[in-house]
Each structure stands twice: as structure tokens, then as C-alpha cells.
Image (cartoon, rainbow, N blue to C red; front, side):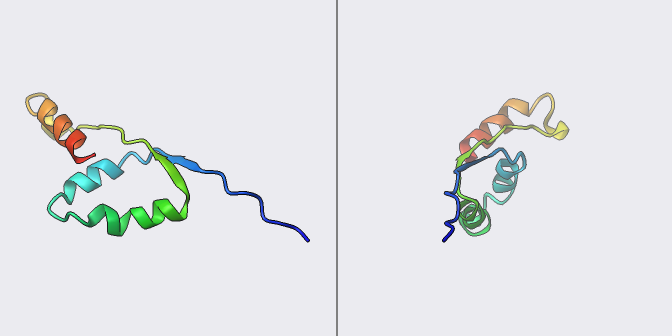
Length: 73
């Protein structure tokens, strides 16, 4: 009888996730409904959340947007 190999926990560095969650900040359940089930199904145990600021925020609003994204995380 063969057994399935043990699942290896994964890390995800999806670079749009933080920006998407911030975009839908008025919907507090957005991450829980749309992303958490997929991350759990993929056994993702580490989530890397890069902070990227769109050009529209440069240069004057870059710091404000960066802090907003960190707060969203």
C-alpha cells in the first residue's frame, strides 16, 4: 500500500494581495471570504506582503499610502 507524501507547508509572496485587501477596505470580510480559504487549501503558512505604491501616489502621497498598506496588513 502506498501512502501520500506528507504535505509541505508553503509560503506565498503574492504581490497584489495587500493592495487588493486595501482596495476593498470597506468590506471587512473580503480577505476572509476571498483569500483565506485558498491560502488554507494550499497549506500556505507564511504570507509575504510586499508594500508597493502606485505611481499615482508619488511623490507627495507615497508615505501616506505606505502607512495605509501597513495598517491594512
